[in-house]
Length: 470
Image 1 (tube, helix red, strand yellow):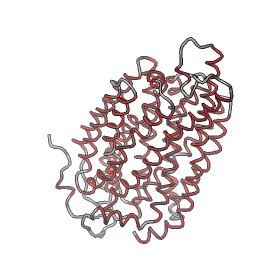
Image 2: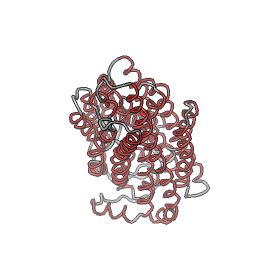
Image 3: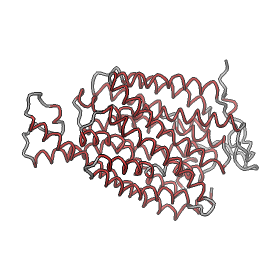
Image 4: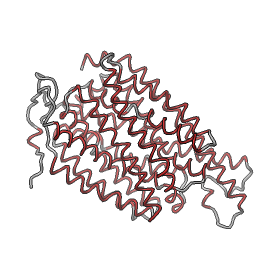
């Protein structure tokens, strides 16, 4: 059987029609398939946060080390390779890039289940990042050629929802596996289906002509050099402001995704599996709804104002902060859950509009490259630096609490892993310190949503101008 895409199809001249590519049923299938890939992409990426506590305990990790595994360890190559792969996506078959990379990162996820310590798990996470770098930019570019501009925001919003759907599946799968097997089995069972999905993409998804769905008469342009692509993006001030705004939202979101489960477990005495199934899975559903709702509201408000793609993320960011503060400071598990649930929807409003703005202000030949640049910025700040920074803050406040409690010097931020024969009172002090440290760290993470909202509002000063010049 021949692979459905070919290199030659991607090198043809632009044939803009103003119509969506393929039949409604087929492009729906493609959108669902790409969303499924993105879902698996995110599932494999965040599974470690779902099953984090048994890993922390087995390898005696600090919060900072765990932050490296969930953040920088994954984001290093994921970020560094984003732009080169995006450039390849502007030149060659996006379908082949997506399919091959899906197979690679799925194999790396399986290998995480065979690691023996912090160093080997860090290396496996780096490998996952290498493969996952080939998903988002080419997928966004592909969807933009399948859907005409009027339907693009909602389609990209559905695709972005794969993130939160992956989060839900990670919570449910990881939670149930932990209750029956081990954290190692979770990596193996979750990683394997991605290999099959990658093959499905390779053999069933067609590569559309570049710019097919853009307005009729859009002129074909030669592939710009990397310098020319950077120059075009550099000239768009709105791009850089929303990139930093998105980075702050991602910093808060990824950090909470890494450490909210530990906060719930420490505060309410729950196990990792129970936390994932009863609480974190529901938060993932809320995030998926928020992602879709953000895209829908943006498309609806665009009929009234071109500033909709920056207004909607600002509303979401400002709305979620007080809810997160209430949830983190409440001693009632029901209050915590419901405030986290509503906040989880608001805090993902920015995803669809962020990608939509990025592609709206650049020419079609650099769309994938612009997404690569965007992901480089947001991932290095939000994903790479976020969890390690918040983990470090958790360690700092945990240690401070222990010092205030006059605990022995042997009780540090890793106090859960000291000798088994210590007294129950010291164990209680240890848990109180870790709970306090995690609460303060999550509160700090939440405030970055407010900073993001302010920047989205500020970006409105440049959006109209950059749209007119695109």
